[in-house]
Image: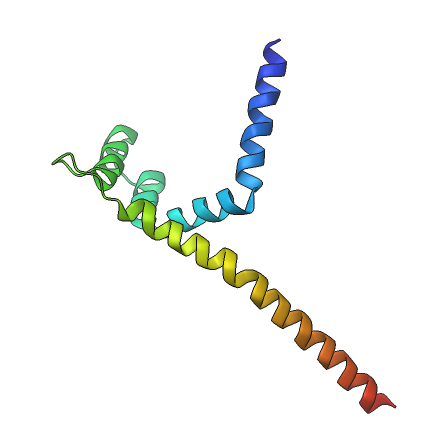
Length: 107
């Protein structure tokens, strides 16, 4: 019973992280908030202090929420997911053209 629950949780987490949307968003969020992430992971303070700094970076002391920490990575994610297939198509067309030019020169 417990093994089935843990396997289910692992499968759900793997599915979300390996998804292009979730994975790209997590990557974009970490890049956009790199200062907070690096302080949390590699700071010299105790973990509790680093976590407090991380929370303060996301939610300032006045209680408001910084929506840029969510919106900007979402826009970056959308751009990456839109531009990536176009770039892949361009690279495919270029490599096919390059192959055909090479065959023409060979003949």
